[in-house]
Length: 127
Image (cartoon, one colour):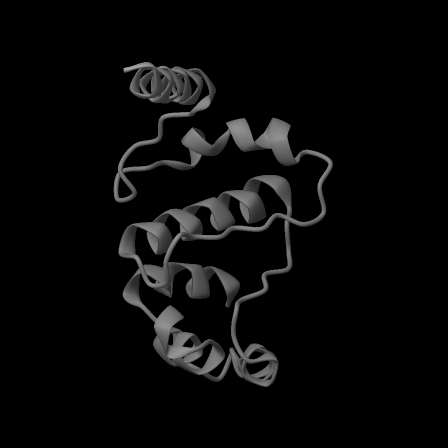
Protein backbone atom coordinates (compact mmCIF):
# COMPACT_ATOMS: atom_id res chain seq x y z
CA UNK A 1 0.00 0.00 0.00
CA UNK A 2 2.88 2.38 0.76
CA UNK A 3 4.25 2.23 -2.80
CA UNK A 4 0.88 3.13 -4.29
CA UNK A 5 0.37 5.92 -1.78
CA UNK A 6 3.70 7.52 -2.77
CA UNK A 7 2.79 7.24 -6.45
CA UNK A 8 -0.61 8.80 -5.87
CA UNK A 9 0.94 11.57 -3.76
CA UNK A 10 3.48 12.35 -6.50
CA UNK A 11 0.70 12.40 -9.05
CA UNK A 12 -1.44 14.76 -6.97
CA UNK A 13 1.59 17.01 -6.34
CA UNK A 14 2.27 17.08 -10.08
CA UNK A 15 -1.33 17.98 -10.86
CA UNK A 16 -1.23 20.74 -8.25
CA UNK A 17 2.06 22.09 -9.64
CA UNK A 18 0.69 22.07 -13.20
CA UNK A 19 -2.47 23.86 -12.08
CA UNK A 20 -0.44 26.62 -10.43
CA UNK A 21 2.12 26.96 -13.22
CA UNK A 22 0.01 26.65 -16.36
CA UNK A 23 -1.61 29.33 -18.45
CA UNK A 24 -5.03 28.47 -19.82
CA UNK A 25 -5.54 29.26 -23.49
CA UNK A 26 -8.67 29.01 -25.58
CA UNK A 27 -9.09 26.25 -28.11
CA UNK A 28 -6.77 26.87 -31.10
CA UNK A 29 -9.55 28.05 -33.42
CA UNK A 30 -10.79 30.61 -30.87
CA UNK A 31 -7.43 31.71 -29.42
CA UNK A 32 -6.71 35.44 -29.81
CA UNK A 33 -3.40 37.34 -29.88
CA UNK A 34 -4.16 38.87 -26.46
CA UNK A 35 -3.90 35.42 -24.92
CA UNK A 36 -0.17 35.38 -25.74
CA UNK A 37 0.62 38.55 -23.81
CA UNK A 38 2.24 36.41 -21.11
CA UNK A 39 5.00 35.68 -23.65
CA UNK A 40 6.18 39.31 -23.55
CA UNK A 41 7.68 38.79 -20.13
CA UNK A 42 9.07 35.34 -20.90
CA UNK A 43 10.82 36.16 -24.21
CA UNK A 44 11.41 39.90 -23.76
CA UNK A 45 15.21 39.65 -24.00
CA UNK A 46 15.46 36.53 -26.18
CA UNK A 47 16.67 36.35 -29.75
CA UNK A 48 15.57 32.77 -30.43
CA UNK A 49 12.31 31.05 -29.51
CA UNK A 50 11.95 27.33 -30.24
CA UNK A 51 8.46 25.96 -30.79
CA UNK A 52 8.15 22.20 -30.78
CA UNK A 53 5.39 19.65 -30.66
CA UNK A 54 4.89 16.15 -29.39
CA UNK A 55 4.08 14.85 -32.86
CA UNK A 56 4.20 16.01 -36.46
CA UNK A 57 1.20 17.35 -38.33
CA UNK A 58 -1.22 17.68 -35.45
CA UNK A 59 -3.80 20.20 -36.63
CA UNK A 60 -4.18 22.00 -33.30
CA UNK A 61 -0.42 22.33 -32.83
CA UNK A 62 -0.01 23.88 -36.28
CA UNK A 63 -2.87 26.31 -35.62
CA UNK A 64 -1.51 27.38 -32.25
CA UNK A 65 2.09 27.68 -33.43
CA UNK A 66 1.00 29.86 -36.35
CA UNK A 67 -0.82 32.16 -33.94
CA UNK A 68 2.15 32.30 -31.56
CA UNK A 69 4.51 33.10 -34.44
CA UNK A 70 2.18 35.84 -35.64
CA UNK A 71 2.16 37.33 -32.13
CA UNK A 72 5.94 37.15 -31.87
CA UNK A 73 6.31 38.84 -35.24
CA UNK A 74 3.66 41.54 -34.99
CA UNK A 75 3.94 42.34 -31.30
CA UNK A 76 7.58 41.57 -30.48
CA UNK A 77 9.32 42.20 -33.83
CA UNK A 78 10.73 38.72 -34.42
CA UNK A 79 11.66 38.54 -38.10
CA UNK A 80 13.30 35.18 -38.83
CA UNK A 81 11.49 31.87 -39.00
CA UNK A 82 13.21 28.51 -39.45
CA UNK A 83 11.35 25.34 -40.37
CA UNK A 84 12.35 21.71 -40.11
CA UNK A 85 12.69 21.41 -43.88
CA UNK A 86 15.23 21.50 -46.64
CA UNK A 87 17.47 24.55 -46.57
CA UNK A 88 17.51 24.84 -50.36
CA UNK A 89 13.72 24.61 -50.61
CA UNK A 90 13.16 27.21 -47.91
CA UNK A 91 15.72 29.59 -49.40
CA UNK A 92 14.47 29.22 -52.97
CA UNK A 93 10.81 29.61 -52.03
CA UNK A 94 11.63 32.68 -49.94
CA UNK A 95 13.43 34.26 -52.90
CA UNK A 96 10.51 33.48 -55.24
CA UNK A 97 7.65 34.10 -52.81
CA UNK A 98 6.34 37.17 -54.65
CA UNK A 99 5.89 35.09 -57.80
CA UNK A 100 4.03 32.28 -56.01
CA UNK A 101 0.43 32.17 -54.94
CA UNK A 102 0.11 31.77 -51.18
CA UNK A 103 -0.63 28.06 -51.60
CA UNK A 104 2.33 27.52 -53.95
CA UNK A 105 4.62 29.37 -51.56
CA UNK A 106 3.56 27.03 -48.77
CA UNK A 107 3.88 23.89 -50.91
CA UNK A 108 7.28 24.79 -52.36
CA UNK A 109 8.93 26.13 -49.20
CA UNK A 110 8.59 23.30 -46.71
CA UNK A 111 8.31 19.55 -46.53
CA UNK A 112 4.85 18.33 -47.44
CA UNK A 113 3.98 17.44 -43.86
CA UNK A 114 4.07 21.18 -42.99
CA UNK A 115 2.17 22.23 -46.14
CA UNK A 116 -1.23 22.17 -44.44
CA UNK A 117 -4.16 24.57 -44.51
CA UNK A 118 -3.49 25.35 -40.83
CA UNK A 119 -0.10 26.80 -41.83
CA UNK A 120 -1.40 28.81 -44.79
CA UNK A 121 -2.05 31.96 -42.74
CA UNK A 122 1.54 31.81 -41.48
CA UNK A 123 2.87 31.71 -45.04
CA UNK A 124 0.57 34.57 -46.02
CA UNK A 125 2.11 36.53 -43.17
CA UNK A 126 5.60 35.70 -44.42
CA UNK A 127 4.78 36.95 -47.90
